[in-house]
Length: 389
Image (cartoon, rainbow, N blue to C red):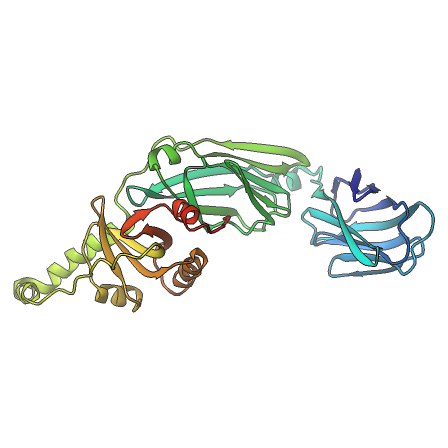
């Protein structure tokens, strides 16, 4: 394989796959041009690969924490350098990526060039018993749950992938649909360009399944039914893609919070009896008030939305949440929010803190222009705040 960067050309003979217990010779040739003085070639190998130096071309060599380093205090004057390693796959090897960097000095400053990563997959045994035990069957499932009239949760779950293998997820989300991550699966790379959201895992985690979830808002029916994606991975040393279409039908069932509240009210009425119910009806109920209109753009954290009216004590009892909670009625919903922030990042940090400390089913950031609720994307544009998920 040939890789280029800053005028440097690198060629290597890394294998595409290795069997447990096997060894191979891998070589690197770097056309370094006029590079002189200090230089370093660093290679990071996946877990389970052990390396031994064969040819160093005058460099000192170390291998530690899966990183092999060739270091030249004064790189050879020849136009090209040549090094080689013996690679051995032990029992811990399950496939993964080799990353490669070359560093050198130019005009008194260090320059770093990262060459294209190379994936080494685990080679399946020809033994039919072993082959069947290591067979993979990539599957992707998409689910959508409408939480409010303008907000819903999208969930995508991957299963049947090979641990350590390369994975990529491309999700198409229309620009006018606002989304916010709830759980992104900790990818190696995350980016968004145009309508495309890109996630890359250089090494798939060693788990039975990987679940991603995010909230989407806007013209909800059009947004949810337009979202679609494609999952790419390596299967038996060959690229494999699974297309995941848009949802066929939106789930408009009552939210889990509504069901929980309904059940609790029913139980409370049975336990209280007529006398207690009468006493309760005569006592003043501590209702919430709609927060005062903000002077401009404000970001708040919504912690719950339902069709029932609850009070501050309810949040203290069920979630141990003692911060001020405000309520507002919107499209037949009662939406409960907390805090008010001029800066989106402050609101997002508050959301993370609340999600970690309390068992709300996914708090998220909302936005307001004075007393009118708007989308987060509109608020970011109006307040000239730059943010990319």
